[in-house]
Image (tube, rainbow, N blue to C red; front, side):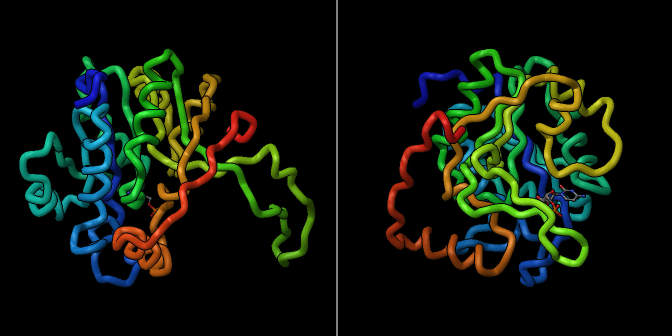
Amino acid sequence: MSAVDPSGVVAIVPAAGSGLRLGAGVPKAFVELGGVPMVVRTVDGLLESGVVGRVVVVVPVSEVTAAASLFPGRPVTVVPGGADRTASVAAGLRAVTSDVDVVLVHDAARPLTPPDVVRRVVAAVRSGLPAVIPVLPVTDTVKQVDADGVVTATVDRSALRAVQTPQGFRRSDLVRAYAGVSGALTDDAGLVEALGDSVHTVAGDPVAFKVTTAWDLRIAELILAGASVPEHPPISAEER
Ligand code: C5P
């Protein structure tokens, strides 16, 4: 049992894409990982953290009934999504009641996200920050290229971070950000940045990686099967 009261925290999981890139013939969120749909593992990871009271899962309109049966006994609400990710998160946000203080938005495709990452994000928002994202340092050198693939600049990687989810927000700020949104976005924190609010970072975790390709899915299977993964070295304050 967690010492933190989870009742004021709701997580939205947008899973309404039809993305069939993993080639399994079903939307990515419903592809099975070790016999369990990815979205179910993702939702269970959020609830295991002990700091999330309810999860709103946003699915294609055709999948609402089937998806609802995937979460027996869990505090999960399934709602139909929209035409793009932004519309789907907005639909999820409409299902969040106004007594909720903290809203997380979490990719369905990060099924192995350690509960500690969820706890860090929620604790930081609860400490009074309007928006919080988990990040990792960028270890590869990053180049900017033109349309022909010719390098035009080398970016200072020490100032770059790779962004994971869950991204956490004060509910009122996320509602305000979504009220003015137009066009499809991949990053909710970017909306809050556009409002002029500061977005803070906490340490992410390599195991929270996004499953996008068949290669990622295989790696996730190996980790689940107990392949030994060395503990990631702590991420220093300078790297956040
Ligand atoms: O297609 P893409 O990888 O950009 O989708 C990112 C996330 O947004 C996925 O979890 C997908 O299920 C979700 N999505 C959604 N509603 C849409 C399109 C995408 O919830 N209409």
